Length: 417
Image (cartoon, rainbow, N blue to C red; front, side, top):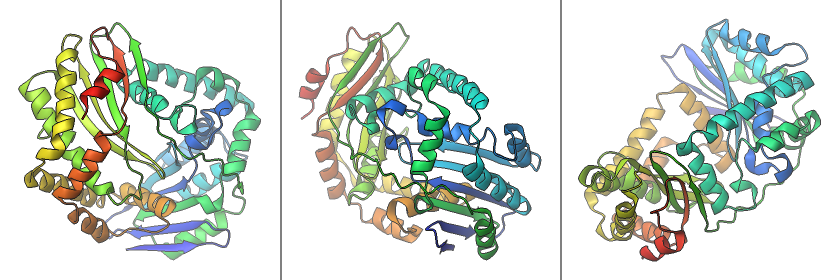
């Protein structure tokens, strides 16, 4: 059972005691991410996340890492479109080290110029590595075309020329202007005492950033196409549509549809396109949500000579699937969602992260029983209705590889419905 305490400054602290565990996961989740950036400093949220580990007023980068790793713990962070998180995993007795380090880096980071210059080089290498991985980059290219000229469409990593020129003041200003206790959740799960944890956080969090800037632009989905003809062994293709936001009534119905369409080896796309026809090595569908939009798509890797057969078959599956969904497929999709939910409950970090995200997005904790009830309400009719609505919308396509035989967006769009 979780316990929640809200401090006077608006900071919310949530804990979940998990009997039988000797470890604890703890982190600070900030409702700030890539979509809060302006075009001029694209990549600054991710750069800030890196810089937070590069030294505070009392510790250098090595000391930050050693404090956690000397007791066998793990420290990490991530930046997404809407959230930046900093977290640790430790033996329960060593939790004070985690509290000390995470609150220190969010309150006392120095953003030293020397460290910034070094970290710029690290991120530029990360961008280079990403550019060399077409099955990763294809998603960024798709997002850029689906949400053009807006923060939602920009890469989390940013562009090399921007990263080279972001100043120390711009990094610091982004934190001071956007990070705020009202947009933070401190979450812990595992072997944890709520009251003791709250008291420790109160003592440690005396100088959190108090920025109030809210520059988040509402997402506006468009249709577009990215093509990069490149000498590769495979064509990497992503075909997608606008999906659903977190709050939509059909959120779980679309997840069930994604599961039955391309969610595993028993899914329709895998069976028809991989197993029966041998047109791809891998094919999968996905549904990702944000606070005010979502994306639904199919990714596959195929050969230059297979793409001509693949596209009509893929479009036929998208056209026909809403009309031929079976109860058996619905039940399998629902079972997969429930299993994933309950398996996640056995992980301290997954529970810690889930609670923080739910408080940020829904302003409350959603009990597993409520989620299961919503999954149970998914029916053949609700899945059919939302799948028809999604796949009848304008498509966005991104592709990398030998593309001479790939049809253009307009022709593929005419194949759908």
